[in-house]
Length: 106
Image (cartoon, rainbow, N blue to C red):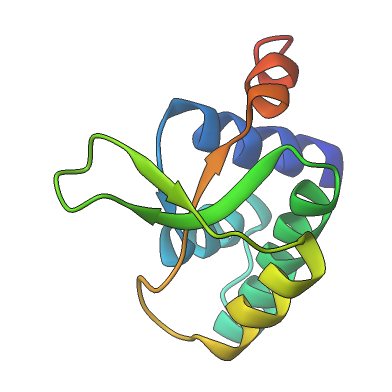
Protein backbone atom coordinates (compact mmCIF):
# COMPACT_ATOMS: atom_id res chain seq x y z
CA UNK A 1 0.00 0.00 0.00
CA UNK A 2 2.72 2.48 0.94
CA UNK A 3 4.73 1.94 -2.24
CA UNK A 4 1.59 2.44 -4.32
CA UNK A 5 0.85 5.68 -2.47
CA UNK A 6 4.44 6.83 -3.05
CA UNK A 7 4.03 6.09 -6.78
CA UNK A 8 0.72 7.97 -6.98
CA UNK A 9 2.17 11.06 -5.28
CA UNK A 10 5.26 10.98 -7.49
CA UNK A 11 3.07 10.61 -10.60
CA UNK A 12 1.01 13.63 -9.54
CA UNK A 13 4.19 15.68 -9.08
CA UNK A 14 5.42 14.55 -12.51
CA UNK A 15 2.18 15.74 -14.10
CA UNK A 16 2.45 19.24 -12.66
CA UNK A 17 2.91 21.31 -9.54
CA UNK A 18 1.05 19.84 -6.55
CA UNK A 19 0.07 21.93 -3.53
CA UNK A 20 0.53 20.47 -0.04
CA UNK A 21 -3.20 20.35 0.79
CA UNK A 22 -3.92 18.57 -2.50
CA UNK A 23 -1.27 16.01 -1.60
CA UNK A 24 -2.81 15.51 1.85
CA UNK A 25 -6.24 15.04 0.25
CA UNK A 26 -4.77 12.51 -2.19
CA UNK A 27 -3.26 10.57 0.71
CA UNK A 28 -6.55 10.69 2.66
CA UNK A 29 -8.44 9.38 -0.36
CA UNK A 30 -5.85 6.70 -1.10
CA UNK A 31 -5.74 5.42 2.47
CA UNK A 32 -9.33 6.05 3.48
CA UNK A 33 -8.04 8.13 6.38
CA UNK A 34 -10.65 10.62 7.59
CA UNK A 35 -8.56 12.10 10.41
CA UNK A 36 -6.86 15.26 9.05
CA UNK A 37 -3.88 15.00 11.39
CA UNK A 38 -3.30 11.38 10.46
CA UNK A 39 -3.62 12.09 6.72
CA UNK A 40 -1.15 14.97 7.06
CA UNK A 41 1.32 12.75 8.95
CA UNK A 42 1.08 10.10 6.24
CA UNK A 43 1.52 12.73 3.53
CA UNK A 44 4.58 14.11 5.32
CA UNK A 45 6.06 10.61 5.44
CA UNK A 46 5.68 10.28 1.67
CA UNK A 47 6.98 13.81 1.07
CA UNK A 48 9.99 13.16 3.30
CA UNK A 49 10.84 9.95 1.47
CA UNK A 50 10.50 11.50 -1.99
CA UNK A 51 12.48 14.62 -1.03
CA UNK A 52 15.27 12.54 0.52
CA UNK A 53 15.47 10.35 -2.59
CA UNK A 54 15.69 13.47 -4.76
CA UNK A 55 12.53 12.58 -6.67
CA UNK A 56 10.58 15.73 -5.84
CA UNK A 57 11.47 19.27 -4.87
CA UNK A 58 9.61 21.79 -2.76
CA UNK A 59 8.93 25.37 -3.77
CA UNK A 60 6.26 27.46 -5.47
CA UNK A 61 5.00 27.95 -8.99
CA UNK A 62 5.59 31.32 -10.60
CA UNK A 63 2.59 33.70 -10.51
CA UNK A 64 1.64 32.70 -14.07
CA UNK A 65 1.91 29.00 -13.16
CA UNK A 66 4.16 28.24 -16.12
CA UNK A 67 7.33 27.53 -14.17
CA UNK A 68 8.37 26.23 -10.78
CA UNK A 69 10.84 27.88 -8.41
CA UNK A 70 12.35 25.29 -6.11
CA UNK A 71 13.60 26.21 -2.68
CA UNK A 72 17.38 26.20 -2.38
CA UNK A 73 17.29 23.86 0.62
CA UNK A 74 18.51 20.38 1.41
CA UNK A 75 15.76 17.80 1.99
CA UNK A 76 15.94 18.00 5.80
CA UNK A 77 15.78 21.80 5.72
CA UNK A 78 12.83 21.72 3.32
CA UNK A 79 10.97 19.26 5.56
CA UNK A 80 11.54 21.47 8.60
CA UNK A 81 10.25 24.50 6.67
CA UNK A 82 7.17 22.59 5.50
CA UNK A 83 6.38 21.60 9.08
CA UNK A 84 6.67 25.25 10.19
CA UNK A 85 4.63 26.73 7.31
CA UNK A 86 1.18 25.31 7.71
CA UNK A 87 -1.58 25.19 6.60
CA UNK A 88 -2.39 26.37 3.14
CA UNK A 89 -0.60 26.73 -0.12
CA UNK A 90 2.74 27.80 1.31
CA UNK A 91 4.48 24.90 -0.40
CA UNK A 92 4.07 23.10 -3.68
CA UNK A 93 5.92 20.11 -5.10
CA UNK A 94 7.22 19.15 -8.51
CA UNK A 95 9.11 16.10 -9.72
CA UNK A 96 12.82 16.40 -10.39
CA UNK A 97 14.32 15.05 -13.62
CA UNK A 98 15.03 11.82 -11.77
CA UNK A 99 11.49 11.82 -10.40
CA UNK A 100 10.10 12.19 -13.91
CA UNK A 101 12.30 9.32 -15.09
CA UNK A 102 11.22 7.03 -12.23
CA UNK A 103 7.57 8.02 -12.60
CA UNK A 104 7.59 7.22 -16.32
CA UNK A 105 8.35 3.58 -15.44
CA UNK A 106 4.94 3.17 -13.77
